Length: 168
Image (cartoon, rainbow, N blue to C red; front, side, top):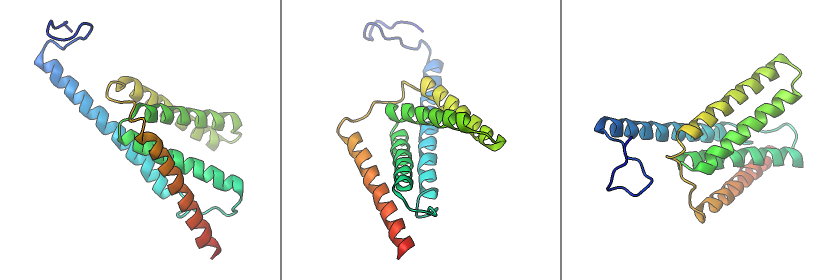
């Protein structure tokens, strides 16, 4: 890399057109990867909510846990599709925390494998976040909290509809 005199001080510019083209491909594939991961989080939300998989027993802890998982999946999924840094960091932290929680509380071999898969997922997400950090943005300070509020309202509405449909 070479410092270009027309660029601001401290910035580095690639010296060859081939390097710029490779950087453009890296940017494109990074955006595609994050948007696919965000789409997978939204797909997981669509397939794993109380309307599709209703709980056997409805109590406040079940509803709170369901709303927390659903809200997190919606917020992280939309954040990753929007290429937000906070969504990448949140998904990385959640996958790691859930993996460690499973690993510490697991007594069966199947639980150990699930925790190891989640820990591998968190390492993969960490690698993605580090490699493609330049592509991600922190986001909009006004719209992103509204996204979280909308996700909470959506998940509360889904839980309410599932509860009413189950007990009607």
